[in-house]
Length: 314
Image (tube, rainbow, N blue to C red):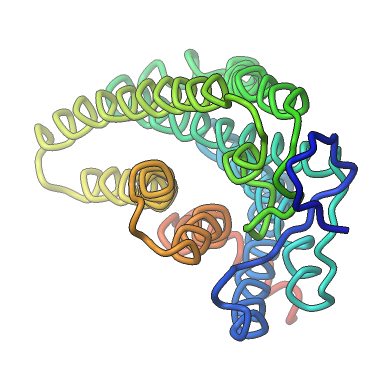
């Protein structure tokens, strides 16, 4: 049921429209999204399984990578199944509390992923700039604590979002012009001053991205300074290759995320369907690319995967 009057109400459900303006292409878009999701599922489950079962991969870098794989699984699974329900079965309805839960998981675990990318950069910094103390600094317990801090930071900073959304009265509509419960898309339906939501959201984004990107940048300044002071040999190439994998993962996460965030807030002339497609790319493309990047560029993972498949074949 759609509400179009100005009477204040507390919606029990929202209706997700999908991608307004591209309804005719919903089926083709959904097939592409489904393929991306399946690749993300298979890739991240494989990465997690390989790291869990192969003792040779029980090192800080791979522990962080397994945490990243779990986070990517949560991010993509938070949105895609419901999105496919909208595209394939015209099941547009989502309960109010399910919408808030989806919103929380999307934004919280985006923050968790950003924190894990910082942890991986710091791991590379210690491994390259202080290799003799790497194992004593980044012990298993320290790695677990760093992962827990990244998790708690994401959860704590994003907890106010659903509570702020829940307290607003809604009077325009319960129709969300999006494929999932994106925070600002839902908040804009409220008939109240939502500046506190906008300001808090902006402050959290600036804090997380500003802090994390600064830490990553400073880590890589030190890493590249150390690497390029080494004589050109195989060890130097190996370090650059490992760092190259991490830099690729960082770029695939931050560039779509920042572009989606900035265009959503500051570009008034961009078509709505472009905003929505960018928002979906930010949630679906990095989880698909991360296991591919690490699987192809990291020798230890590549060898373990090949060994696993050769064992299955034989």
